[in-house]
Every structure is written in structure tokens, then in C-alpha cells.
Length: 586
Image (cartoon, rainbow, N blue to C red):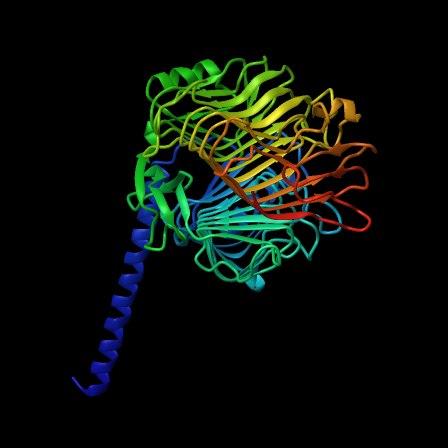
């Protein structure tokens, strides 16, 4: 055989081996997809599951149909989850109301979207202050043009994401009032721009630009330089205790699981730096898959009594009695902003005071008959410690009115000690249907009776008395955002005690001896003249009750907040613009 023939044979052999390798790779990929398809759970018609073997045009058409429904549906009834099996996709994914976009890999890098994933301002003039109720979780993005736009406000979590480029948290510098980021890596710059406030927990980036009123960084290894109040950066070096939100994942054998991340203490940065998030996988077979068209509180409680965990598929669940979570380590998770709505004046959900209960990804919507509480964690008087197995609430949201008349006394009451609240928005609607001082009634947003309760990303707005009433000891809050109610009809209707105008937004009860909070912004928009709030924060004077980095702002032309905390800070003003700040208290 001459030299030319040997070269020809060598090239031919290489081509055959290369083809064999490609086919083997395709075989593995197709095998995984085939196994995942065989094990595909029935998650209902509003959960769209995509795999990389599908034509991009077909996937894009389905995404566009969902966005056409949800783009302007701020108070609509449709709910969707868009799920992506591991692989690479070339798509443009706009994320509308009540839409959750999820990657199903162990790592965000297992699902890659090349093109665009974006949340856009829902109001004219690039105004994103009502861009609510949407989520992007568990995948990587290679953004066309180099930057991913996530112009959002409340209840729009960005979790377990990898942005291979920059991230922009506004739309052309229009107003936004967000938001939340956790367990996320951004290879480039994060620009918060005109965001009024933001909390980033356990996230990483190359750089951060932008500030406004209240920016909080917890467990962020590369927090931006500068010190509060100029710029208004509050930095906590390590996250004291947290468990990341449970998530759906398909393993290498095609099995569907819910991954329960491990509890971390004194942590910094993302969980998946080593390739996946440490934790345990719970087979999806352990879950009862709830459907809004067939399930009731009775059927759900029967499944819980059998030892099942719960996965709520997207939709609105109208309940005639409470869902009761009584077993330790029960996992209750919602897809696509699944919504629980009590219709007969009961709670929507009650939990026992048990170790390790997880509730994630649910919207609690008050019904037309007043409920005593929408979600209650633990029984009244609970005193058992759960430090090593805390109850956790992740992306649990509350709404009173807006989609129709809603009424409740308390939205969220936490009786269990060591509970972790990991992002919540507790909102009495200030616009929409069924809105008025005597129509969508809500006394308190959050009441904490348990000890050692920790809250990250606490957004509570417009309730008619204390937005937050904290009765337990050794509580901790990392970031607080609150607008007090817009609509008190007169001062007489809005007074908490003789000589005290209004109800403080954040109230630490007089008997509390130990409490600490970082990064609080409290704002007023009184619609009627002559309304005043004496103090935004009200606390007992004790050496272990400590507050750091507080600001108040009057956003409207009427009234004022007279002090930031107790008798400190002085009044807000519109003309001239005065935004009182208190660095440390006491």
C-alpha cells in the first residue's frame, strides 16, 4: 500500500470513527430524551414540556401562544409553566404574567437557551412597576445582544440562573420596583438602573452598577463597593441559614425528581459551582399531582394523609376548607403560580408544628368571605425548636383583591420557631377589581409569633393596620419593602393609638427583647389629603433590638411619614424632596 492510499484509508477510518462518536452521542442524548419521555408525568395542559429534538419553530409557536394570553393579563385566570428538558434551544422567550420558565437539569448549565429570555415592562413608558408574578429558574441564557432584560417588580423571582452575558433589571431606565435574585451567576455586569430596591442573596457576578433607595446583598462574594447611604448598599457577608427552593429535575436515567437542597449555614455564593446543587432527590412518584379541574381540599387532604407530598399544577384551586399539612418533611410545591383561594371564610392552608415542612411556589388569593388567615405555619403557642430541620417558605405570595373581592384578617401567620421565609410578597391590592377601604379588607400582612424566625426578601404592602407585627424573639429580617395603604379615608380611620397617626409598617411588639433587621424601605402614597403616619417602624427600646439602614419616601403629594423609626429620622417631604434616612438604631 503506497503512502497516498494509507492517507486515504486513515481519513476514511477517522470519518467512520467520528461518525460513530457523533451517533453514540446522539444515541445517549436521544436515549435520555426517550427515557424522560417514557417517564413523562401528566402535569396537565398548562404545563408545556419541551425537549431539544423538537423543532425550534414548534416550540416558539407554543411560547408565543402562552405570551399572547399572559402579556397583559395582570388579573387573569390562566396559569402556565414552561419546562425545558436538558439540551440547547434557540428561542426568544418572553415571560408574561403567571408564567414560570423552568430548566429541568441538575445544574442550570444542563439547559441552555441561546437567543433571549426577557421580562418586559407591562405599562407604557417602560414602566415595570406592575410587572408581577413571573419567574425564571434553573437554566442558562446566552442573550442575543449580550444582555438579558429582566424588568420586574414584586413576585418575579430569578433563581438558579446562569446568564452568559450581562443582566439588566429595568427597561430603558423606566421605573421598576423589584425584586429578587438568588443562587444565580451572571458572567458580566448586573445593572439595576432605576430599580427602586432589590435583594440579591447567594449570587455572583463580574460587576454591579446602579442604586436607588434600598439595595441589599446577602451572601454575595463580589458585592459592589461603597457604603450606605451613598450608594444605598447594605451588605451582609454571609447568609446565616438558608435552604434553596426545591426544584424539578430529570436525572441522567430519565427519572423525574424533586430535588431538596441541603440546608446551608454561613454561606456565600451559588450552590451549583461544583456542577449540581447538594441535596436529596425525591422521586416524583412520591408526589400527588394536583389538578385544579378535579381536586378539592378533601381530596388533597386524603392524599396528604396517605403520606404523599403535593405538587400543584397551574390553575386556581377554589377551596371550601383548609389544606392541612401535618407530617414532618412534607413538600408542597406549585408550578406556574398555582393559586389557592378559600371561598367560605376558612384558611387556605394550615401546617402542624413539624420539622422540615417545605412550601414553595404558591399564590394565596383571599376569597370573598373573610378568612381568619390565609396560611398559618404551626399551631398557636408552638414552642418546639426546628433549628436543624426548619420549616421553609420559598416564593410564597399573597393577594387580597385585585382579581375580585378578597378579605382576610391575616395573610401569613408564623407560629413555628426557626421558620425561614425565603422571598414573599404579601399584597393588599391598590388597583384592579374589588378594591376599596371597606371592600378588600386585610388587617395584617405578616404576624410572627415564633422565635428565631428569619426572613429574606420581605415585601408587604397596603394592609390596614401593621403590615408586619413581630411578636417572637430573636427574629431576623434581611431586606424589607413596604408601601403603606393608599386609601385611608381619614385620619380617624387610620390611627393605632391615642396621639399616634396611622399604624407603623414594621412593628416589633413591646415584649420582644431581641430582634434585628437590615435594609428597610417604607413608602407612602396617600390618595387623600390630611393623612399622616407618625412612624414607619415602631420598636421597643432594648439593647438587642437593632435596625440598620432605613429610608422613608413620600411618593405622592399628600401627607407625610413623620419619622423613620420611633422618634428618629424626621418627616418626608415632596417639595422640596426629602427622603429621611437612619443608619443605625438605637
